[in-house]
Image (cartoon, rainbow, N blue to C red):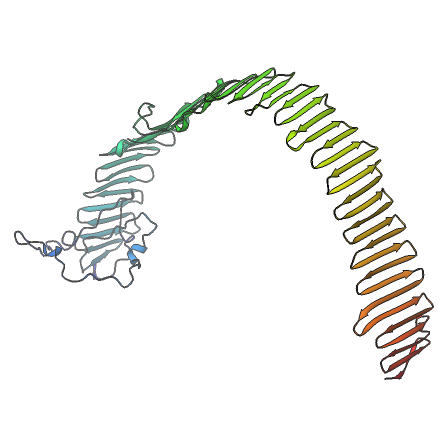
Length: 552
């Protein structure tokens, strides 16, 4: 039984918005109206007069900006983030005819036609000259002017996209196009070529990887490698920048400003930099450097030689000899002595037991224990016989020490200090004096402050604002400008300046206490067994620690 239906909605049996497309991902380009639309109908044609301009090129009105220039059309937003262009049904007209013949379904609209048999063991879609079929959900066939496909999933793929032909059989793939080709046998072999002289060859089991263009490339075959820029091949004569080698035995690299070479088995390193014409060349213990400023020649670790221009050079034969000069200065050093003359003519000579310096200052050393130093500019003479004798005389000071018995240190008109043995010290200076007998006795003055300590019995510290005195353990007195606190045995006295006069109190522990203030006075016997307080007009007495108010 046949049923002819005229419906405007697409049939539910239609597969996807584009019907049966190309599994290779290459889709035909939609045709403009008049070519893929209604057969036999063409759009209106416009002809320009001779010598005139095309009407389409003449502005007719001011350009109008969209309301929201940043708005993204829905059809564009749907494909953002995807490489799928979308294959739209072509050749449809306003009328669609659908037919059902048992398991057979067909749909036609203009030059568009879709057919299938349920269950979908066969599907066919025709769009003008584009015909695609799927048989048994395993074989796909398509023929069109730009795209051809034969696919037996998943074993065999034969595809054409315009002038590009691709064949895939299992792990083997071959592709050809006007600009190159590809041959793969995954995962063992990959080879191909493309535009701009591009070619590649990868053989992972052999650690072989090669890729190059007309401008650069990289090649590796096991330990061999080469990476270059400038030119189509690995050639140090033509490349602008190149690095190649045989790891880990040899490495070489060069660019327009520098060059290097490394041979690890021979302990060799070479580097050249155009800036300053700096060059470093190392062969095992042989170390050589050269630049515009100077150079280095070393045979490590015994021989060292470096120079800077014609004015400075140093040579060392370790550990036996060193000689160097810089301008008018020179140095000679051996294990037995050092001799040095600086650029101002000062001369220093030193051995283990004797040293001598003559220049602006003078120094003599006899054995490491006796030293004599002189500075004529400040009339300074300093002598040291370690560790017993020290003498220092100059325009500013006069010091002498006979360790450990006597010491005198003086800075003229500033301070003077005497030591007799390590225990007695007396010092005077611009602000006061001090006499100490360590570790018991300390007495002195600093400006208007004094101190006296006879440890551990007497401590007395006085200044214009306060004084603290302790005669341990009976007497304690602390005073300042406003108050006095004094403890003598079992008596305590306190006095403080208050508004209107002085407030004081006296305690004879634990029997009696008495105190006065500008407002009155008070007394207690045994801390309240009996007592009396008067403050202004208020009077109070205590009997057996119970207070009784006498007046308000």
